[in-house]
Image 1: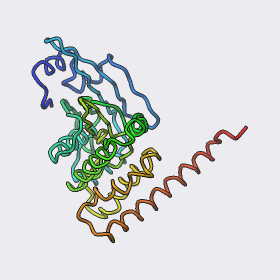
Image 2: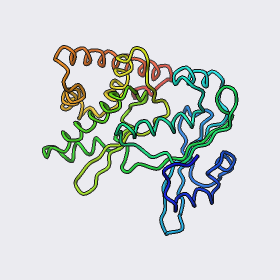
Image 3: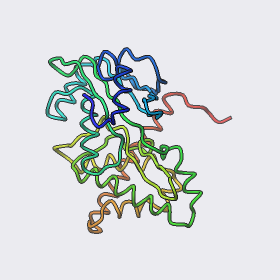
Image 4: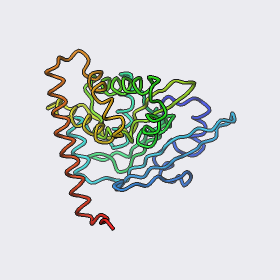
Length: 275
């Protein structure tokens, strides 16, 4: 399945055989992106040259056959049998449909089997900019009084609110998955990594709080101290003071649990001792 690709990119995808599951898994170009916990997944940064002199930066996600338990969990969450790649493909389309700025899914394929899929793959475009995890602290320091940080704060709140208003949650809403792009004095934010996104049918408040706690936990302290209240007010626009306090307390409790869990992991891994 190929969707939304211009003809020049479509030709390049077909030339590299990235329009089929067999071709995607046989592809040996690009640069693999490794990180802990990928398991049966493989991520590859790919640059495709088209016939018009252009170069397209894409990301190829390949999923080997996954454990049955993982396929069943996804089936339960989404209400139908889909491969991991097809799930993210549909998530990207759903996010874009409600106005969330994100990547574009241009190709997807899966080998069917009774539970989920034997193998599946997804090809997506890159988003501009850099992860806020890497660049936002410097951005805050570079714009102490010109209103740029305040504008980004409002935009970030609207981005998350748009996703949540659609009934979806991200489930990995760390600042490493929000990209900040600056161009001609304007800033735009993009949300990436929608593999785990879903629309909870029960306990939505709990899921919204988890997303917001992940964001708060991961954002720079310099931004948190001054701008988190404004972020929460913009996210909860129209909600009364009691509702804002309820959200704030629930988020803080979750952040505290996350910090305690991280501390236990550091102690358990034998972290470095003071000299």
